[in-house]
Length: 202
Image (cartoon, rainbow, N blue to C red):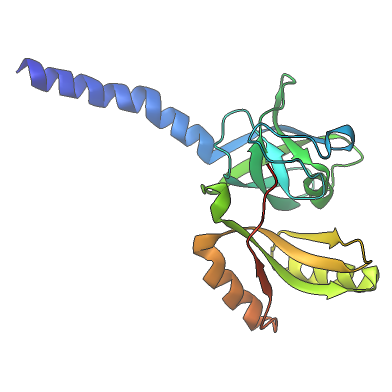
């Protein structure tokens, strides 16, 4: 009898303490800021080298590798980011975005924006891939492809090589979603994109 009471107590405690925490991580609203500049090239809390041109972000508690959809409530623009750092440490802010992510949701000028966070996937960093859809000598052409892909809700960035080539890359593709993502690209006419297993510098 005593054991049964103890089990019921633990079950109730689980719902009181654990369920609210998990629910809070499913969706969250608050203010986002962005960082770049002097932080570019520095080591993040995950051990990864920070690249302000990639779609990454800092969050106080979400596990590294979590893919989060960040929506700017004011304009409806959104992007997908990968959590690889800790912060922000300013009261009232819930996420710190890379410059690339901030540009995607139109908050570079304001510096701060009210956003909604939705967890898309929880994954280990090694299970997150990128897909190169095109490479161009003319930046304008790369920009056109980027805009086209964004219409289909792909998280896209432009990567600039030393030889002047501009690559159009879809970031933050979880390994389990790779097949469906490639199928979606194939349906748009992109038959043989290059899958990149990122060599994250630590």
